[in-house]
Image (cartoon, rainbow, N blue to C red; front, side, top):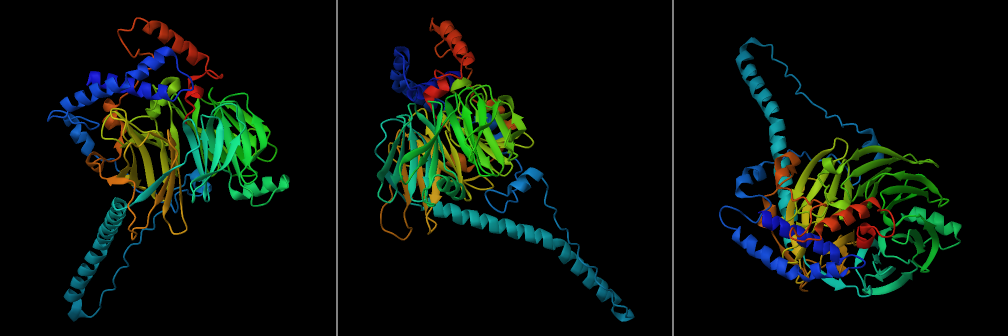
Length: 553
């Protein structure tokens, strides 16, 4: 397995090199070896696929661990995004325990024995009712899951490629019938989904666009009123490696405000609390808050050691993830100065996402007290952010799999999956809140998916957009129609038997990368490159940092 892991590591590094802004001759040479390395990895995996070792995440000697399931009680959530007050209070909902009322005994002497027998039978029925109710609820839940899985197995999608960007698409946002995309080519584009045509080309950044965020309509109305624009105007925020956050009015296609942050912007989100806040993350690990009312800086925090790669909001909470694997949870106190208060910070050692170095990436997706983390491996990590407890969900049948993003829509969890060994890409679907695998979606020559946005139509059909090498709109077709879909729906048997696993049960199967380990042991220039990488990491935070060159979210 040693050579397999080395090949997987080299292929992962090559994939990251391919999405950098610029390449050295040495890096181009490494990329040229990708086909050779893939061929060798496929050969080794074939040799290991005998009875003593499977292609799955764990070998046969660990099958018992794979079978153990972590008890995961479904969250008592009224909606995918519970009220923030309940999240902050952390209170537990009390369960009413109704005891059966005692049965009155008959006082007549002749019916004493019969009455006692009836009482025993009544009490027996009362005691067994909760068991029957639980069994019935479990059966209904299982039937519901079976129906949902069957529906997704029959799902059909039409794919339409949106042509216009001339470089990697790093971020996407869906607004009504429009899709907004940001690219390494420095542009933000607005697309009309029904016609799959470019609606607006928003050029103004001088560096690659790394992140997008859409304020809610009520906050858009406030800004539109202050700018004497139509109250139907929608705005989009874009962050870039040029250290700017720009606010675009989509209908008029103009930048109405530009905020200079003094650092390359690698992540941002909008917090719809109080007067509204823009929260940005930089390639040097800084988290900053900006007032939506004045656009002035409210707070600057050196929150992480490496680049902030993801920012997500949930009510008054803000979640930040960084390249070194750390995750922080912040509370927005809606104040003019220093609105963000740190609630929890979990290091890369706790999350198990460390070791990626400055090129590491984390993508976050919060749900209640759970935080789903995609970190470039074959698993989705799940962090109980109050306690720091970690579990993981298998998202690929081989260690050569890469998970770049996770996204939730309604009761569905979507994880992107890319195979380093053969270049195949797919989306895996899990039901929520139990995280049970349902199906996988792919199509011929599917590119690596780096970002994802979803919405539903008035009829409840799904519309998705995925970005990476290609920008693609997914349109769900009616089940009763005769049109043939472009997507292949299949079941991965390795994922069907997987369940949520505690980190303690499976950490020995983790494929970690040592950032100081040289890619080629026989390379005489390895020591010099290691020294150069350490120097680059120490100097990160400027325009030359590796995160800015990758410009991913």
